[in-house]
Length: 468
Image (cartoon, rainbow, N blue to C red):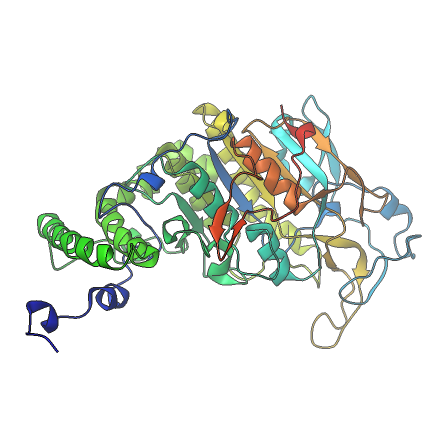
């Protein structure tokens, strides 16, 4: 009902941006229309002990009694019922199952660690082991959501997104939040690093690090049909067009996030290629980390930390590799895939003076039972050497970033089934991580749908006992 204009001959700009290629996975974001002030470094609520986080996620649920929580009583009761009642397991379980792995004391602190993590154990005096972690249910999906997003059922922003939102970026040319998983994705896929109702610029950028070719690992990083000057001109034209569009649509946050993704993808063409190219590392450094996907991830993580990436998540592998229902001996193979790299990563951070301001978190979404999982048709039929899921008490550890090294917080019962001393819920873990970063978990909120939301919802307390 109006005279034709040039705009009538092209797609609506919102439709155009929604249909275009995803750039750097469509998730990496930066400023385009104007300088995105929310992505710039932000002054935290109080003086931080850490500036960045690396989450080493052993998805599937590693067994606490086979890694960082030794239980001699399992040797005594092996093959017999344990004298504990009222703890229901997800699947039928039976008698006590002793650990096939030896523990010994390491460092001046005398921290007891399994033979599975001999390289990590060299840093015993840097580790703060929490043996009293608890979650809500013994199922992967809700427990992954709880550990990553603070809620096991509802769509909520991830921990990495809240950290990115609270602290902003230190590098305009790289994503503020990166999530690496070799060979695919974990259970619940991209929901683990979602931004939900936070601006899209705070969602994690996913990389399949089993792909060694950087141009394939980071899809669409380069435009084969235009050089950088031409791309810059195209982006400037889009900037002008979308400035008009945004003003007429009250600055649609989804549109803003998508636009910023194009600009970041453009800026990343130089720095990202360099950051992820581990072949630029000296031979002795690459040998220190060892071979395999997890070693490559750890080297990339250190290179990203040096360049100001705020939150990095390193998944062990696709699916749930640590889910040892059939045979707990599988933990030996799994630990061998990551232990050397983790030890080297901590060594490397210390050598470069990065560990003091980097909080490293290791763990899974829950632990495993100290009793054997009984045979069940269709799963572990005929095998009685594995452990079921256990959310009543499990272990994680942290290092650097202001935590007490060589320290053990909390305890489980004599069999390692449930937390009995200083229980620490996932909400408490999140509140403490934010506090170490200088963020008050009760003040870090986002107004959405008529109320103020936060990572810990109405829960969580800061555990000051683990702080240095």
